[in-house]
Length: 262
Image (cartoon, rainbow, N blue to C red; front, top):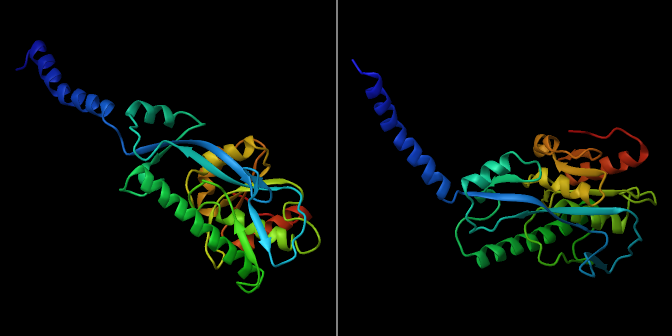
């Protein structure tokens, strides 16, 4: 039979590996990225003193309101993120803890990863132009559309860029703006056939949108739950799955029609 003293010794011996494991975890970097709300940019206006969208070879219209693409500001791909920071991030509403490989491609140097993200943005810009022209049933090559978002990387501005091109060319189709004069923000990738894809970091992006004056946020439908979890008060979420659906929702919003919600 174990005495009380021997039981305590046994428990202490069993606890040592567990304590050692926690100690190692506290010191070791973890495969997470810490994110917070980043900058937003009005795709109908200028960024860094340069127009975000420039269209030549076709008549464009003056627009009112704003269409703000959103970003997250994340720790670098090689940053050491420790368990204390991860736990702190879990309990804060202005921070998000995300798997590193959901933000950055695996492998490569920081410079290579940065270049990869810039390439993703460039490809996203080209696809956004194709999606907008396909929606408007206009031939590629009928005009030139240039997009300039400086050094912002990643593909998540696709939806907002397509909407910006449509608004500059035809607005809501009845002489008004897609925005209805509002400040509308959002996120989502876009494919050439107009499908909207999820992007990650949505809860932080809604906070950046609200901070910069948006009252409406277009969110990929698959990320409604995440967006709703940390939704700032006064920010209306509209789920979207296609470019056409996003346009229809904005038109309905202005006319007082039925608008989907998360």
